[in-house]
Amino acid sequence: MDAILLTPGPLTTSADTRSAMLSDWGSWDGAFNTLTASVCRDLLAILDAQADHVCVPLQGSGTFSVEAALGTLVPKNGKVLVPDNGSYCKRIVRILGYLGREAVVLPHGEQEPADPARIDAALTADAAITHVAQVHCETGTGILNPLPQIAATVARHGRGLIIDAMSSYGALPIDARTLRFDALVAASGKCLEGVPGMGFVIARRATLERSSGNSSSLAMDLVDQWQYMQKTGQWRFTPPTHVLAALRAAIDQYQRQGGREARLQRYTENCAALVSGMRALGFKTFLPDALQAPIIVTFHSPPDPAYDFSQFYARVRDRGFILYPGKLTAVDTFRVGCIGAIGPDTLRQAVAAIAEVLREMGVRRLA
Image (tube, rainbow, N blue to C red; front, side, top):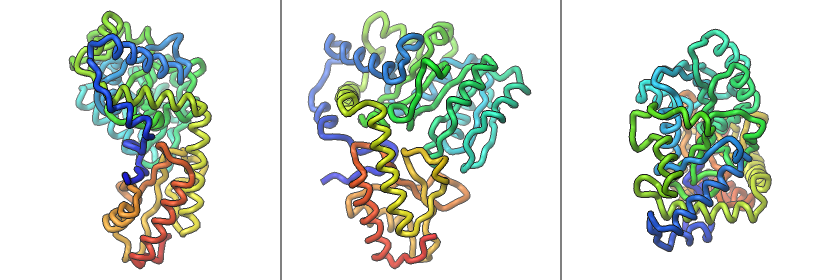
């Protein structure tokens, strides 16, 4: 039996999603073009973004699409404010460096949500800032940043907003009718519970249309990708056919199961089962409950000298659960994901497996 992936993507998928990859598709075939169009339509509908936005899918992991959005929508002389409270914010800064776009880093603590008042002050102080790049749920810790307030601040200043919604799209509430953004980026292998290999950018049509010539990469040029799809219904280059077929199946299940509200409810129940079980064992969460998104939870590693993460990980894996290492530099942690085609009983079984492993290792001091 396959191990359960308690990671933030790749994640455990359903049998229906996996079986959708058993057929081969012709990349120029009309049936595959219809499949692409239906997926893009539904990805827009999840945000109620059909009126002003378009969906541009892209081959590769979610980071490919983040880079494509920044490289296409930010002009070469643009300047991007990045509120930084974790590793995926830092990745955006790295991308901007590679792209030759100027970045202004607004540092926050790893336990501190991005502060709309500080963003407001930074935009007031520097009229040259053209965009804000905001991670919605920082997967390095699991912290949820206050996106509606940040979006309102950015809109009030008339700047562009690019959202990394990799770990929030499809579960946490985002409504394009009330929340203004130039682009929102997510991927197939996260809260939609597809398989990894495809990202997508929900871009404001008017912004995309005036972004021609910004990208210095052919493969990453969202304008070129979108225009070609508009003309032909096809992807410019070999598409991830099996990934798209799996995503179509995953979205069908998502809709049948009750959409975003039902997905968030299940993940919230998963998170509650995980956190209550781990706290009962003696573990301490890195974040207070008020800042914790129900996507992935960071736990402090036990200070017991008998604890070793590599051994802990391997033994938990032997019991059928794959955990995730910590992403923090200053604190020793590990992470447990709450997302995927799993329910709270699975999380309770994982906690029981962790308890067994700790006993086996002789780890007694957990906090």
